[in-house]
Image (cartoon, rainbow, N blue to C red):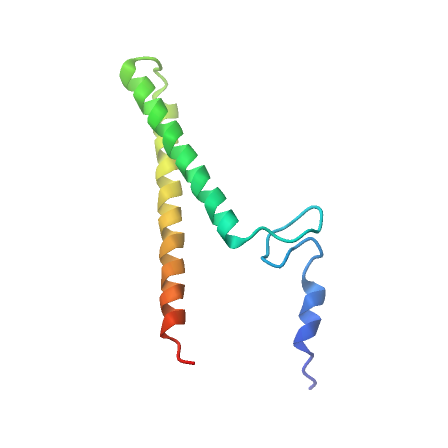
Length: 102
């Protein structure tokens, strides 16, 4: 049984994926992990700000749409929990890498 070369794996990767793994429409270099993480954090912040604004509007009597306020709050909460989960996994991976011996 012959074992194929690892270099043949490159054939399985689509052409529109950059080095960092981000999909690009113009085949240019991929988005860096830091840029992707920063973008995701900005989205979480936007969700939290939107939820806070809706809660404030509800408290001031500017809106009476309770489901919208609750849904926005839950979206922000879930996004924050997911972000913290990702952060914890990254920290675990970093710790594991630092424990490796050369």
